[in-house]
Amino acid sequence: MTRTPSTHSDFVIVGGGSAGNVLANRLSADGSSVVLIEAGHAYRPNLYPPDLADADIVTGPDGHNWGYFSDTGQLGRRIPAPRGKTLGGSSAVNAAVAIRSRPADFAKWTAAGLRDWTWQDVLPSFRAIENTIDGSDELRGRHGPLPIRVRRPEELTPSQRAFIDGATELGYPRIDDFNGVEQNGVGPYPLNIIAGRRINTGIAFLDDAVRARPGLHIVPDTEIDRVLIDNHKAVGVLAADGTEHRATTTVLSAGTYGSPAILMRSGIGPADHLQQLDIPVIADLPVGDGLQEHPFYYNIYALTPDANSMHPASGAILWAPSSSAHPGDLDLHVSATHLYDPTASPTGGAIVLAVSVTQPESRGRLRLDPHNPLGAPVIELNLLATARDTQRMLEGVRISRRIGTTAAFAPLVDRELTPGPHITDTELEQAILEQLDVYAHPTSTVAMGPVVDNHGHVHGIDNLLVADASIMPMAPSAPPNITTMMLADRIATWLS
Ligand SMILES: Cc1cc2nc3c(=O)[nH]c(=O)nc-3n(C[C@H](O)[C@H](O)[C@H](O)COP(=O)(O)OP(=O)(O)OC[C@H]3O[C@@H](n4cnc5c(N)ncnc54)[C@H](O)[C@@H]3O)c2cc1C
Image (cartoon, rainbow, N blue to C red; front, top):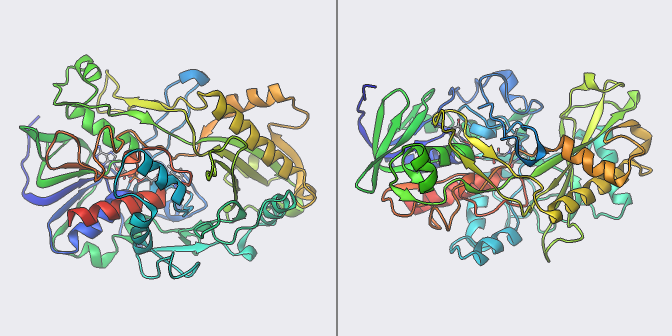
């Protein structure tokens, strides 16, 4: 392969996703030269294809998703592990739920020994990235690039409203804004959706004015193979096509699957694994270990013909503690969406009450494919690997099924599709294991602490940082998109 040298920049950022685009915006603001490299296509902010911009279509059209699957694992089958591949990354294909991680989550980061991540530390960045009309001035941001709006009751479908009423009937408090002080209860989602359009980070943080900055250079359709390292100092990256992009500081924002894969191909990872692949070991670090993902189970109901409206897809959520939650934790989600093929319902309409354990104990890992290190990584999710995780999932599904029988919700139901009526506890556990999916919230493969320091610097390698969801030390109890953007904003502040 012939290498093509490039000009030298202050920063090279690999991955134009949730984190990478925040960093590209922030780091180019003062005139620094920034090269942002993205494996997928780049679209002008207003020219994302309709089937990519439509917030009701999740996981993206063909060619905009890496198409990964998990390893077979203990569940005995491969589970799709979607990741966005375009400018915007996973924020361009996700459900656009915009909920921050909770103060209790950050207390755990601090307890794990990470300085500079207390709630008071992170709040300014949460406020800086958003603009919202919701909530209080003390907590919320009014002028940031990302618009966030709580779904209004009149925007919800009848069955999403009935879900909220049904949970309230069971005694769960009503929450008006999950980014407020109180989150234990049920209510409509806050979303980064405006007029049905998902506002991904390629739109919000890389608008036309930002893209016109002379120092910012976006390089789309370019996959990075590895980091160029000279005497334990990163000097840039090498693309799979042989192009070099040299920079003073190299930042990997390729996501929870992409960043560890690049590190390992660069010789930074578990020595035994790298040796198996004949990759010279530069730093023996537990890259890829610690993978966490939120397990997801779909309790699905066919709706009666007069209540089978399925738009908008994302509507409401119940966030609650399981009976074995640690004090202060909210570790169960029941999310009410219409992300389901209506033709699979006998009535032409359905609602999915999707249950997740959002503070899982189980951890998996990621490794390179020894036969094709540049191809799809080996993703060992290891979901529900502990008895407590399984028990909490069962408890969550029992809650969602109780909502299914409430006076508010039941009249809208034609029949329960999964797991189906008249099922024993043993059959329910079996059904969960057979149909388990992912919330698509992987984190922690390049965790702060073991692999990078509390500011994202890779241990033992100068001028190399990782800034994306992979560095979270543990799964957040909220969907991770907003927290990933906060994290990038914070790291940008330290680099500026
Ligand atoms: C289907 C789906 C639904 C989700 N729903 C929600 C939700 O509603 N709310 C929420 O909070 N979270 C949600 N998430 C999760 C959330 O979107 C992610 O946690 C977040 O986007 C992760 O940001 P990131 O910057 O770490 O990675 P990404 O946003 O995935 O960005 C990584 C970028 O790096 C690029 N890349 C990877 N490898 C390379 C390489 N070798 N060379 C060059 N570029 C590379 C990728 O193409 C991608 O653009 C969802 C995710 C998915 C997939």
